[in-house]
Length: 116
Image (tube, rainbow, N blue to C red; front, side):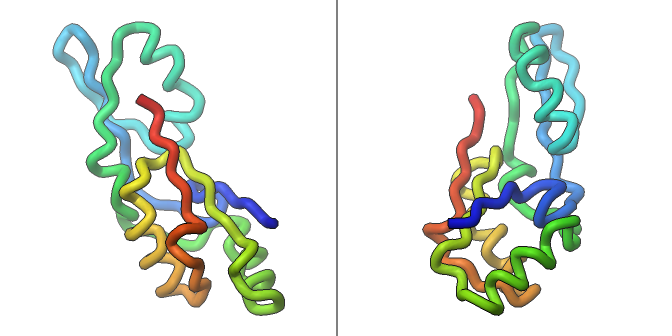
């Protein structure tokens, strides 16, 4: 089995997480910022809106995309998985992105575990 993260690993994108603070302010953060800041933001009362994060916005190949493609070409995709912090409903858009670039993963091999 090979397991890849999606954001900043297999792909880069302009998909953002919307952060809504208790004081009424909001901002958008990218996947890297979310990974680093989510716990602190949540501790300060932030609520996250993943609506945009369910899409692959302006996606491009990430630094390990070619590794996944080589594995796919050599061995197939039945043991290649994507595990992402995106919501489960991002699996379809992620599959479309990967398919368009020639890595045809089964949709059940794309697992999102949105943090709420």
